[in-house]
Image 1 (spheres, rainbow, N blue to C red):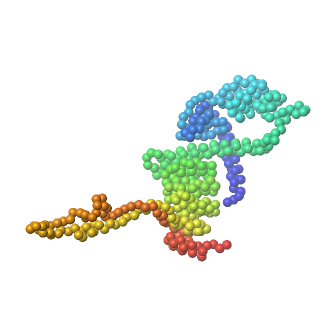
Image 2: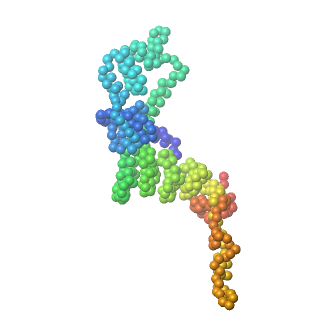
Length: 422
């Protein structure tokens, strides 16, 4: 892969994030209200609802602005938020350094970090020599009486702090973009591609597919995979198409997982074919590792994917996994020939009893006790069972063009004669 790509992508994300920041800063004038929300995973959020996005809320929380799907909310109730209380106190705050300092301390007690910083800066603007404010900002007086930053061996480098803040801000903005994509993709998918009720409308499905394939933003990948992977087989095939448009590692990672875990063999094969086109050696290594998984399904699906990718370097590993022996319960059936014996000798016989001739038909075999099995006797026994993996054999056939069945020795001989020479 091109080593320049991560830097270019980071710049592109920065531009996108900046554009979203501007649109949120100048394009939103909705009135917010306070909520205490408890999510279904047990998390409690003290927040303000900034915007109703349809299937999600945009929330202001102590860690920043986030989007939350309404389906993830267990319950919520109205209350006066700390931000609302802050705004009310801000309106009544006297225009003195001491008043703004006290409001900053009030914010500090309620974990309102940005608001605390704003109040301290405002106090300093009103009185640059206000002692409590200077101390709260980390200043102390030197021998000459000037305010200077307090020395600390643990104090962070200002440049590092600025870089960390910029990175955190960018991450928050990227999360916003991803959340927006979740809302958009879910709206397209749930209503047109994999509806919860009723059959799929083919015309609507085609339109939805076209709209999905128009998405070119790499930040949409989490939404595409998170939403469409739970849909029907047709929508998951469209997901493979959508991921095929992105060369990003995020797309490759999801395709690798789909190639071994998707329940549909058609989807798994489509993902493997796209991975073959990418020609990324890391993919082969990860699928090679999967050949030694304890999960039989993952092992077999990884072998199939390697066969699709014609990964000749994995032939020795495939040979090793073509068959195995595992403990299991074996069913045995033993034919019992008593029935044939009875049929042969149980005909009518003529006997003279006294002066009378009697025809006698034996009704039973006397030497057999009650409950004796007659016919087929079936029983179960624990034993080592040989398992032959057809998927591994088919992968070897696809890669080598030969078919030695499950004869491990012949496959090894082929590899010894045809393996790439260094």
